[in-house]
Length: 90
Image (cartoon, rainbow, N blue to C red; front, side, top):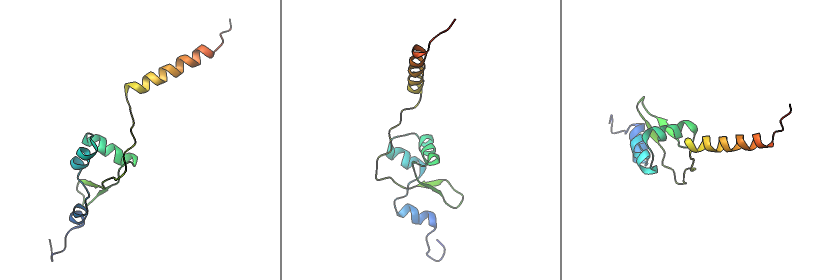
């Protein structure tokens, strides 16, 4: 600390802002997922002094989203329902 003044990063960390690994552990996801949440706006993150970002801790729960194979199953079910309703002409 120069002149006994803490850096902005130190100030945020003293005010409960978390590193990537800390926020990931707290919300129960992988660090890559936490980074994705920040890009999507679900987590607030600030890059300080050109270093890794710090994340504001959330007090409310994150929305629970299931992505992956389940999305394909829903898409396939909707597609088959549409096909059942279509009429075929010869």
